[in-house]
Length: 304
Image (cartoon, rainbow, N blue to C red):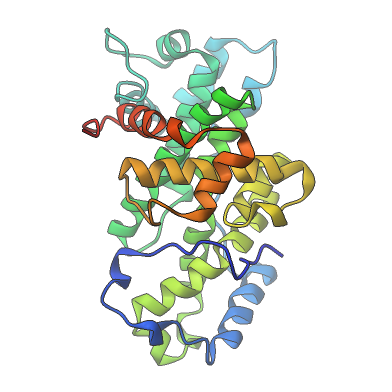
C-alpha cells in the first residue's frame, strides 16, 4: 500500500493557509478512509479513463511498422481531441517557427517522442479532473504538465527513459482526481464536519492520493517504474526496487517545479527535493537552469 511515511514532505493546498493544525485532527477519519478504499475496490464508482483514441495511438507508437499517417488517422476520428492536440502543438511547449495545421505535420515536426508527450498532456483533460472544482482542476493540470516537462529534462540529464519520465510526471497526482471523485460519490455517507470542510477533504485526498494513484496506474497497465513513481513520489525509498529511481526522478521534478514557481506546494529548501538531486547524481547548482527551462517550455516569463 502506497502510504506516506511520517517523514515525507506534505503538500500545502492553496486554501489551507488560514487553517490551524486542528484541521488535520485524524479523529474519526479512519472510517472515512476505509469507506473511500472500499468504494474504489467494489467498483461502484467509475474511475477516470484515458480516451480510447489516445490509448490506441499510444499503442501504435510502440509498433515500428506503424506510420505517421495511421497514427494521425486514429486521432482524427475524434474531432474535439484533434482540435485540442493542434492547440497544444502550437503552444510554447512544442511549437516551431511555422504554425502546425495538421496532426501528420505535428508528427513530422515534433517527432514521435514529442507526439507521445503531446498525447499525455491532452489526456489530462479527461483523467485529471475534479468535478465541480474548475480552479483545482486547472491548477492540477498545469502543475502536472510542468512536472512532466521537468521530469523529461532531468531524465535527459541522467540518461533515463524520457518518455517514461514524462508520463510519470504528468500522472504523478492522478490519485488526487480519483480521491475527490470518491469523496463526491460517497458524499451522503460522510460526516458533516468533513462535508463542510474543504481543508479536511484535501487532507484526506492528499494523504491517500499515492495509494489511489498507484491502483489506477496499475489498472491502466502502465509500466512498473511509472506505477511506482505515481505511488511513491513522496517516499521513493518505499517503492519497489525497479521503480525507486523513477520515484526519485519525479520527486526531483517536483522540486524543480516548486523552484520554478509553478503552483508551488513545498518549501524551496524541501529536504526530500534536495535529497532527490543527490540520489540522481545531480548538483543543486543545476536547479536554477532546470527551473528556467521548465518555465520556458511552459510558456511562462523566465525567472529573473
